[in-house]
Image (tube, rainbow, N blue to C red; front, side, top):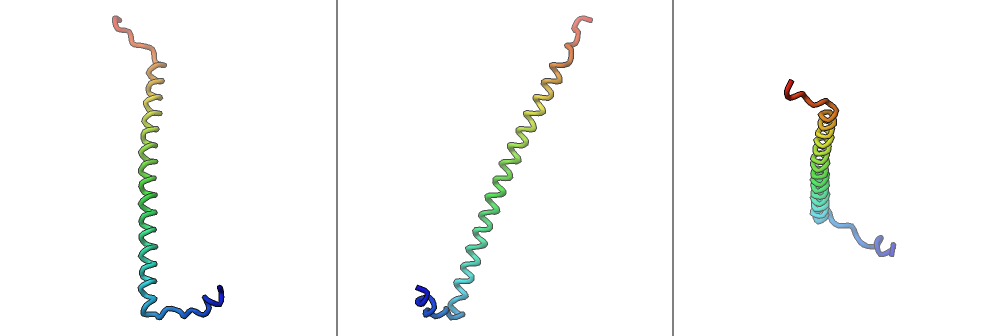
Length: 75
């Protein structure tokens, strides 16, 4: 098997340029897709964190209101 690989000639530079450019294009496309996926995940996490902060704030406000004595209506 190694002899077969050693016996095959290298691509001429005029033909190899297309493959190198193609490899760079594939790499950049994969990189952009990866960054897009990470950005979508970050937005989802931020949205969920805002929801949790809202739940925690409303719960804290509810406990504070329950701890305060009710105001006297007729006094």
